[in-house]
Image (cartoon, rainbow, N blue to C red):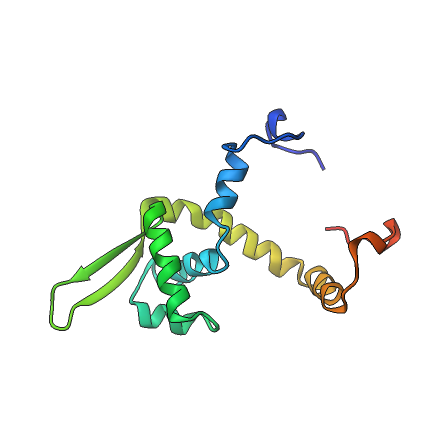
Length: 141
């Protein structure tokens, strides 16, 4: 399959500030893409409690930490309504709305390749060492 990547990204080395490394740093947190995806599904905005209930396994501490990181990166904004008690809502920023597209594409790819992901998960769970694989055992996508 021909690559649509510019030639500079088709061979190593990749410099520290290249676009692929920058985008991977943006999405390197365990919960980052799931929180962005969930905010998108919830209409691009949500109160913290609803967001946490929508992502099983996400602790309040990790949600708060991830939301702060997303806010610092400019993908999410925090809005406080000055009522009693104060109400907080997190929203995707215009940049966050742009970054939803590749996340949705990746999630769609994962759904379309669930069997291959299951096979990889089974290999990881069995403790199979990558060095022991032969070319015939390789999973292709």
